[in-house]
Image (tube, rainbow, N blue to C red):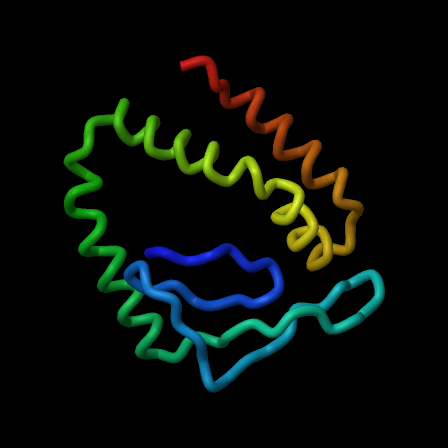
Length: 117
């Protein structure tokens, strides 16, 4: 999937492909009740396709050695690192908490999991 990250327009992702929807809802800031960004509502077909894609992806993943799985997950985490502030903003807007609560928690979890390999 080649896509630019957006933190104000959201899609469902099914089998690595972005999908919109004819039906949407809005995230809501619980501290202000303000409507935030529009979010797509998955159809039954989207869900069925996503389950099929996940089952297909699991076949090679289950054969992947543990060390390679760990490396893949750590690489994904490193790829997300430059966007931690944006992820923190989205998550905390939906949760109604200050951004520092999310980012401090994320870094704390990272330290406890370990990143020395």
